[in-house]
Image 1: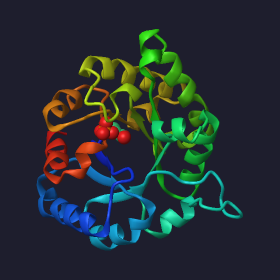
Image 2: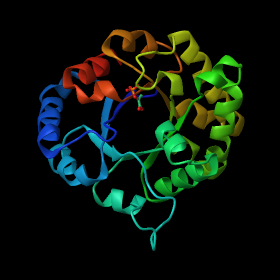
Image 3: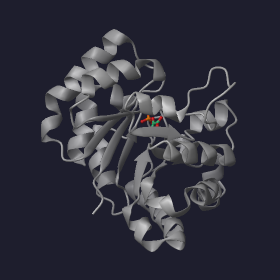
Length: 247
Ligand code: PEP
């Protein structure tokens, strides 16, 4: 039995004042939620989030981590540093990083491995562009993206979370239908099962891409959709919690 995970990705949207309101709202109403809740926030706000959410059931994490352990990598933040601030999760390979920062599948795998080695759970994002979907390449693309990550995870496969995020659905208001998403999730789980059948049943595979209160229930009802990675709607407490209640 996989506990659903509803993880917010605040992206580069935050301020001390806005976070205080959002976090207070979350803590005010998370009691009735049976899914696990998490927020992935910009690194400068981790101390604030740790101090507000520490001791609650809501977990937190970051949106990226360096593939390196430490050293002369100006501007980078290591997985160990994130752990110092109590992060449970770190998103790696978000399509915005893959496209704006030219992150390769191999780099994403290294980041996932580093996160895991530091004691965090990587949320590894995969997903196809519209052009790739239209030419029928979705399965090939997600398999190519995931393969080096699975190699890097080795026997610790069960310690990761995967997020299927079709690029054409992120922040666009377009959502994969539950059936479309389920088909890719099942394919991803089959890939996991080729490595280890037991772990494949334990890994949570989240859907991300314009998940909102009005479409969450149908998406989350699918057998291989184990939660959501929520961008825009995670900035609105009532939308985020309403998605969480649907899980
Ligand atoms: C995301 O960026 O991970 C995401 C799913 O964004 P949105 O929910 O806004 O589409």
